[in-house]
Image 1 (cartoon, one colour):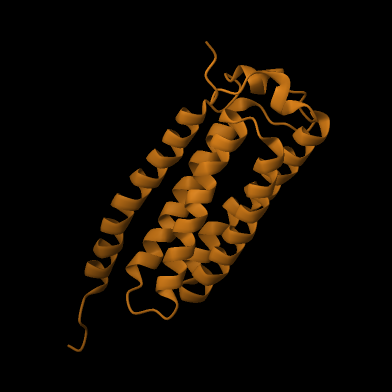
Image 2 (image 1 turned 45 degrees about the vertical axis):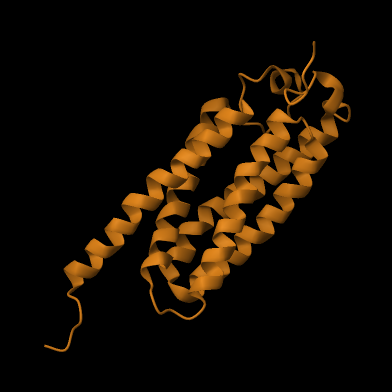
Amino acid sequence: MNEIASQGQLRLAYLRWALVTVPAILFLGFLSGRLANSGYGNRWFAALEKPALMPPGWAFDAAWTICYGLMALAFAVILHARGAKGRVPAIILFLVQLLLNLAWSLIFFRAHQVDSALALILILFVAVAATTALFWRIRRLAGVLMLPCLCWLAFACLLTYEIGRLNPDAATLVAPALKTQI
């Protein structure tokens, strides 16, 4: 027997990574949304004029839960790929894009900065595309798992652009939650 680990042991090692990454990333996404007061319950967001292609609120919850879950599974695949060429840069880029992703809700929903949020989401799209490409080179499955998030981000870029176009005075529509009024 020339194997270092059996297939079952390798699957179990991946499962351990997934049991850490999936809940952690889902929680961070939830926390970011909660801190930002994101969604239709936000009075500033509710007051904005929305583009015709804006999905209902539940669609955002479902899409981001799926995206964060798939990103976490892809990350677990890469973490499990010890010794793979390009693994460390892929991990670093994944963490950078995750931080950018988490920051977007705060900039858009909390600070009411639509233009800054648009710039950030465009940078985020490029970072996720680069992460997807690196993941694909290391393990094709990890790259495939990132594709739905990339597609959703493209749609989110369009929505952010359209909201900015329809609401040029969005920053002054309602007092930002980051400012204290006495």
